Structure formats: structure tokens, C-alpha cells
Length: 323
Picture: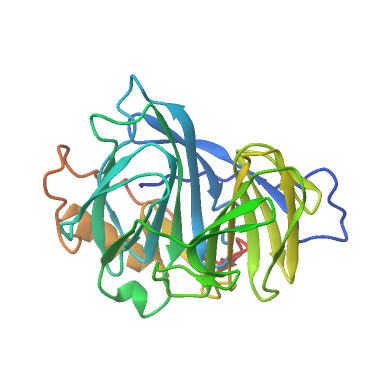
């Protein structure tokens, strides 16, 4: 997905004491994506830009697209990141400049690694399900992966198990003694949690990871803090467990990872380390270099917006500017 960015302030949810600075509710904000889709952007935000290496979180739907085209995002470029796409409802057709043409459906996972550069498009097929609901996330790539070869992988089967009244689907990383087949380049976790009842369920966490919970649908809470769709609950680091509960069929996304040490420059669809790196990626895209062509897509590639008149600066995971 392409991105635009404006950043709302962070707020503390009711019931979170000042003695627990790790729990912060980050409200999402609506961003138009393509011609027909609006997403709720949860990351980056002004004072919290990352969860581990997760640097970008979009939640879209549930939307009624029975009489609409659904998702229509023309070819656009990426550098320095992985895209992780997960659907709860609907279908999206992925095309990329490596020649991959891959539909994704609920319960399946697409992971695209940009490396030094890749282009792709995302579209609902002409005959598509009536609902569309899902998430797309970006993972910042460390050296040397961010300057390496591009790649794409589709995972139709993922680890799934139950913990009490909670169903867990592991998208990436390791959790509960299971390992996802998806390849990542830093210690990372992404898992869908689905409640079957109202009883609380405790989940083990790694104290060296930082974590957040994204509400997908339904009413739920984590360690007594309510979290509803359209918000991301930042849990911080240093926890060895979290207890979740909610209404039956409530679904959450648990994101976590080792804190990402490198400051990033994020602009449009590029993740880099400096203004010069981003400017070079933009110039290459507009000149038809580096990223390749998304064959058989019906629309021309998206033009890059103009660079800001001020120099782009790197920020660390808390939003602090770095030289």
C-alpha cells in the first residue's frame, strides 16, 4: 500500500495509572488509500513510531464492497521494508515487479520484501466477496537486508492453536513454542488472537520485546485496559505476561519485537536512513529505474509526490529527531 502521513497526539486511556507508563492508547486516524478505500492508520504516530521493527500499521474495514470495486491501489514502489498483508474478509490480488501474481484470502499471509527496491499493486478482483477487512503492516529492514534482493512469499498455512478460550494464529516470528514459516530479519512477533468466550486468558511475553495490541473487531481489554477497533494499545517493554479478555468473537492483533535501534526516515513508500537515500529512491522511481515494472496492471504507476522543501530527518522509535 502507498502511504501518506499526519500524526495525532498520543493519549492515555482511562484506568491506566501513571505508575504504568508502558500502557498508552494510540488512536487511529482515517487516511484515503487509492480511489475507493479508507484505512485507519495506527503507526507511525508522533511520539510512538515503532513496535519492535513494525513501523507502519494500517487497519481497513470491515467495509461493504458488494457494489463497489473494493481495493484499487495502482503500481507503486517500496524500499527498506517488508509488507505484511493479512485479511479477515475479502480478497486482494497482489502483482509485483518480480512477476508474482498472487491472490490472498482470509487466513493467508503475504510477505513482500522490498530490499533495495520493488514495485507492486493491490486490487480487489472484479468478482470479489461483499466484505473487505484486514491489515497491512510494514517491517523496517536492518542492514544488510534493506539493500539486498527483493522477494515475495505467500503462506497459505500458518500455525494455529488454542489457549483456553483463545484461538491463536501465528503470522510471523515465534510464540507459544511455535514458529511461523514467514521469513523476517529481526526478532519479531505478529499473531491474531480470537476470543471464543469471556474468560480471561494469560499469554506469556518476552521482557526484552516491546508489544502492542491492535483491536480488529469486538470489545476486548488487556490487563484491564479497554481496547476497541480503531485504536492501538501500546504495552511497552519489560512485561512477562498479558491477560486478555472480551466478548466472544473479538479479534486482536498482538505485535511485538526487539526494540529497533536504528533511526529511520519514512517518506511516502520509502524507509531509509537519510534524506539523500529517500531522494535517490524517488528520483529512480520517477526515472523508471531500480524498481522494475508491474506487468499486466491496468493503470499506470503512481507518480511520487514532490519532496518537502525542508530536509527529511531521521527519527528514532519514540519520535525523537536524530542527526
